[in-house]
View 1 (cartoon, rainbow, N blue to C red):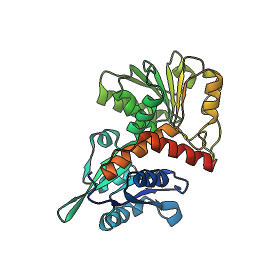
View 2 (cartoon, helix red, strand yellow):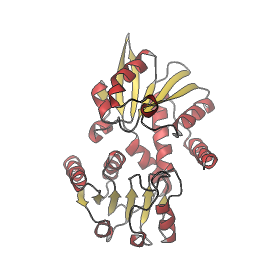
View 3 (cartoon, helix red, strand yellow):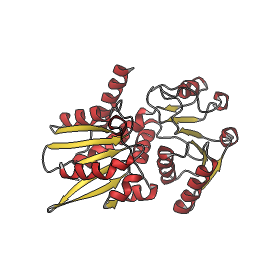
Length: 292
């Protein structure tokens, strides 16, 4: 989208989003580029509503002239039926985390995108550009895990093993990835120890390790030198998993890189301007320290 003015209205729809750093990142980068941008949190929990509120919220955003919306849990799939078009990535993943409103004459088209996978990929490549992707293990087949799995496939990983507490969900995702990407060997597993045998990298995409759900998602003794570890949790930035991985001699990627990558992608979609990645990352890490 190309911004037609320097005054933009954006927002985030989701449940329990009051601690989100997205408003601060988006508004600060816009200000640094001479743009006026207001970013509004639309918290379903605070409003006592659920996904049933989505049609009215999307319609209101269109009427109010929003440039776009970020979409998070529990709305990433439900919003699809309300959109006019999907990007290739959003269609492949079956989930949307960014909606752009395009004005066409007197009408407005709602276009769905997904920057989860591309955001993770941006941060991962920035932190570990030479990472070995020959045997990757993914913990978590939910929304974030699914998006990352698609990105791993698009990065031409030789094999990917998906581990989830719900074996059927992991198997379904593996089947879909093999169908879409053909040459990649994707498998599902229920035992992290067996999946990690001979693995070159581990991606953690479950909520375990968050402030409200502390812990380590697997036995730390499974971590070893030569294995890289990528985390998606960023509250706290240094999770128990990353601490254990550092002790074990692993190279690590913290969850902040994905958060920044998502924000950079959404900023460009909303404004038509390329974000200064180093500036957004530095601002994000200042915010994390202030809230620690």
